[in-house]
Image (spheres, rainbow, N blue to C red):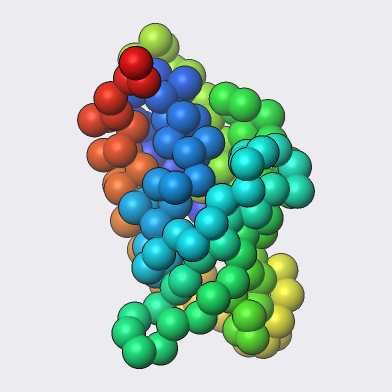
Length: 148
């Protein structure tokens, strides 16, 4: 399992607002190239984001489904990248004060061939990818423009 933490200089509501806007998914999730569609009830349980992942010309179309949601404290999703497999991602947000949020991002293989070949190298790759994803999430939350 790969677990990374980051303190983001933004209120917990602003950080969760980025997670709750499915159309920003490809802006902060490393490896996701394009969001094709977002279910209207995202991020409620069972809602999906439909995306393309990879690099041209090797795109894979798949989805991420919400397993549970407790705004603004937790979002648990299962990204799918079939035929390679599925992962479970637990994103926990903790308000440190009114302007800082601690985000914990835990990811583990849930199904498919990548689960069967689980190694320290896989965990290391996920760790660095997730550090970059949290850096991007931070940029979006810190520079978020309030809705009018």
